[in-house]
Image (tube, rainbow, N blue to C red; front, side):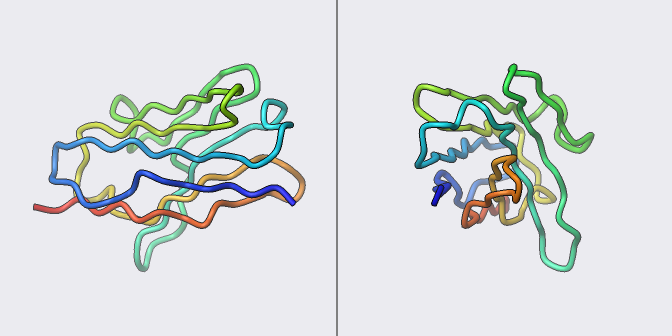
Length: 114
């Protein structure tokens, strides 16, 4: 059974940066879309970004120009580089793999606060 393991969350001041990683446990990583969702308390889950098998990317309007998603198929890992972080970016971030059914990581907390 495939597993996704996230890392890189934490506490950062406004304007700071974090890089999230999501490593997959299986070798067919390259044939699936990968992405990140986030959910803040009392808010709906929001798609943050995804990257297709061909390397095309899509971002939520709220993170465009600040976040960058990338993938390394050799390392079976997807990354989310987050710059110019704002308090409203505070949420649990979860990566997903576009299988049917979708596979989720366990989530990692990102807190942006001074």
